[in-house]
Image 1 (cartoon, helix red, strand yellow):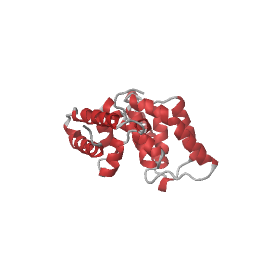
Image 2 (tube, one colour):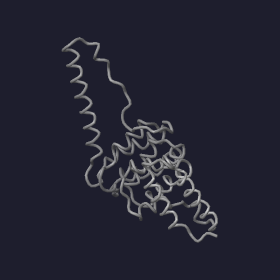
Image 3 (tube, one colour):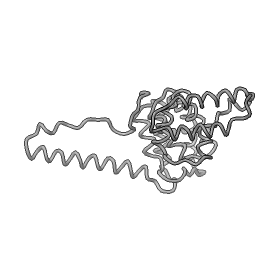
Image 4 (cartoon, helix red, strand yellow):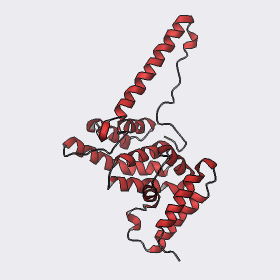
Length: 228
C-alpha cells in the first residue's frame, strides 16, 4: 500500500487476447468479460448484505489478515464484506464477539496506515465509520480526523468520495473529535489542535473541494472553545 490515491479493487492488466486470431480472440474476450462480471457480482453480493447483516466468520478472518499485513488486497477484502446499508448488528454469539475483538485490535494498524496517508486505509476507515456504532465509531472519527493536519487535501478528497452530503452534526463530530489524549488537556492544547486543523484546511485551494473545506472549517470553529 502506498500514500498515493488508489482504487480498492483491481489494477491488473488484461491478457493480450489480441494475439489470438479472429474468432479465438473474440471468444477469449467474451470469456474474460464474463469472468469480470461474475467477480464483480460476487463482490457486490457480499457487500450488499441487507440491514447490517454480515458473515462474522469471514469478516473476522479479513480483519485479522489486514492487521497482520495491511495492503490493497486485505483492505479491499474487509470492505467487500461490510454492509452497504445499516450498521453491523453485533449479537451475543461467539462469532460476533470475535469480530468485535478483531475490529478493535485492527484499529491501531488502521490508524498507522491513515496517518501514512494510505488512501485505501482512509477509505476503509470511512466505510467502517458508516457501519459501526459507538464506541468504535468514535475511535474511527478520531483516526480519520487526525489526517486533517497531516494531509488536508487527501482528507477532503476521501470525504467527498465517501459521501457528498453530510449533516452539520455528523461533519462536526468527524472533524472535531480529538480523542482521549485531549480529554485531560487544558483549553490551550485543544485550541491549538483545532487551529492546526483549520489552518491545514484553509491551505487547500483546489476547486472541487472548496465547499467541503469551508463546511469543515465552519464546524471546527463552532466546536472551538473560547480561545484567547
